[in-house]
Image (tube, rainbow, N blue to C red; front, side):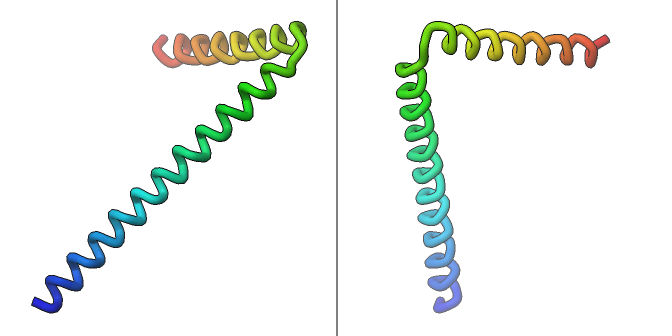
Length: 71
């Protein structure tokens, strides 16, 4: 019984640790998104367009890579 109780406690502590790590990751991602929005708010129109162009280029390259993979 002692061993079973010990295993149960270890399992619970592992679950608690995983939940804490998950929550920390969510908080970090949320902070990154907030910071990105703040940066975008302060950008000029040309900077915003450059960011959009880079995003589109990245997506086009990704699609081209997929096309090459499937042919």
